Amino acid sequence: MLSSRDLDWVPRPVVALADEYPARFVDPRHSHARAQLLYAAAGVMSVVTDDASFVIPPQRAIWMPAGVFHEVTCRSAVSVRTLYVEADDRLPGECRVLEVSELLRALILEAMTLPREYDHAGRDGRIVQLILDSIAVPAGARLSAPMPRDARLLKVCRALIEDPTRNDSLDDWAERACMSRRTFTRCFRDETGMSLAEWRQHVRLLEALARLACGQPVTTIAYDVGYESPSAFTAAFQRAFGVAPSRYTR
Image (cartoon, rainbow, N blue to C red; front, side, top):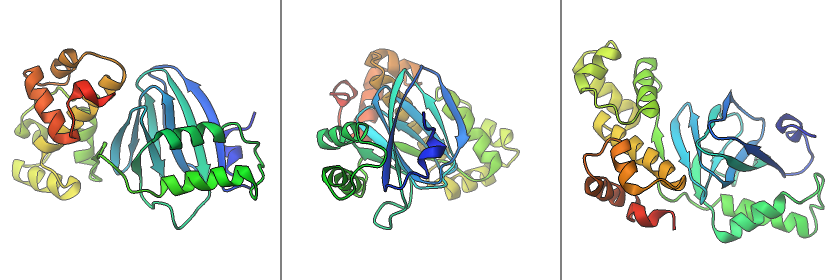
């Protein structure tokens, strides 16, 4: 069976690979020679790059250009459908989360059935072209949190991603980063575009989104990700994603 490394050299613009992974499986930090569209036909993934932390529920996919280092964590059992894509100037040059419409989902699943060296000039080639056209569509809701480059700030962000419920004070985090409160506040906003409080809330909402996609109840999620009440959580979720959490996964 061909590995993902072997697929980098198949002489076609798009090559598909299907994999099954158990819950809590972690694919350590790595990169690919080709760009990658990573889609979970079932299950929820988290993806961390040097620039951002993403949550990928079943109705989304993540696009990663060639050479982007990333780590993938399976939040549940995951059926991964991956497309490895040759360089193309028409496609996004940065990581982004894509809406997976019914059409794109069907195209991705159909791509899994194509022979490795499919007929690029026939029906198979037209399917691939439709996929590429869909990838080029602008991104929808923001399902990522920007990651700082500063190693001291990165340590803080990774700690919050591992446990979004932490309520350490700003002074606590500044001390952990070996920075003054003022320097920490300025550097954090410079590197992420957010205050620590804004960033932490966004990470909590992304964690909540992953748990919703795994089927957990709204009330349980609200307390588990650090909100004082389900109503406070619902209001924050609706402001961020434009829909109540009870309706999101529908």
